[in-house]
Image 1 (tube, rainbow, N blue to C red):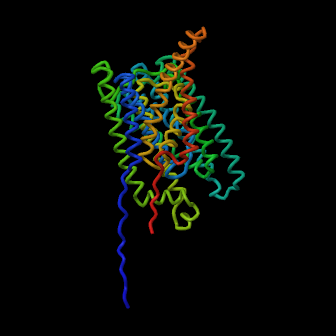
Image 2 (image 1 turned 135 degrees about the vertical axis):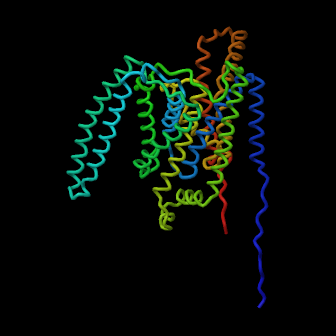
Image 3 (image 1 turned 120 degrees about the horizontal axis):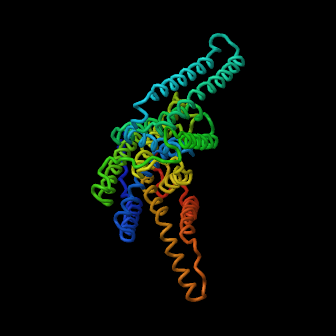
Length: 433
């Protein structure tokens, strides 16, 4: 009997023509901005775009890898910005040289003890207590202990605001604040994930949106911790600032830091995506029932990917906050820090790390340049109308041009969803025979 042996021949790697064309067009756009707006302005734009690229990478692994729609990106960005401020600004001697730190620590111990007591009350059913009675006891304890703890906190925080202004910072290197921002965002993401990841995707979006607003409200109203609406500035940079080396060079140095961060994150995420863990995450996304039937711990894996995405959002928010050199809780807006990141991921392609980086830079260039271009076109039309028809120029063209950002981004997302619903660089799914 003759047997025929067929050796599997790997398919030849295709030349990434689409990627090359898109990134070439993006490079032309960046060079055009440099030619029109100057090096200082354009380098600032690239630094901010690189920070947004880190945020978008955090979202694309949640949404693209695992199908988790996080509508609360703003909250994790704000946590990162808070850590960048708290860990890097100088120590406030008006707070630390008094008895206020001890009183604040005592109030924090009360809070921890109250949480432990309520948590213990929720486990009373393990001692044979009926679940309804356990729930009633836990709720009553939670309400009573909340009133006790909040009263203790209010007394301490009032003293801090009246005597020291706010507690100040820790005076540590900027990088420590960035790492702490990722850790804090990941910790909050773990808590949210344990509570909300069992919800359907639409309910998860609503829950994360609400939690983001809670985080913003807490930071805005905690004058003793963040100075609230008074803002905190200037925040130190991890590189020499503009006062030392000039605006362009300082921003270029900052850009080198964020570019290295993106390169490291991209390398690690690509390795994870191609590893068995990444294939398992995508299997859960595509068919959760089949993955569970194969013995995979669905909830644990979904929680891991959610926390990982939140960590990247916290790091990106810390880098962005340090670059802006000011912490302003009111400056965190859903339009700028959630919707814009969603547009970046949608344009680039959810689940495609390279596409996400492309989408982040491209969308941010469109977002920033739409205002001056709209103003230029409006002034051109007005000058023509004045000469040809005797029109009177409106007095609020600057504010109208600013609103063009929203129109352009809305038009962009509509066109992408219509003609490229999977993004300009969609996720490449390899099928194994």
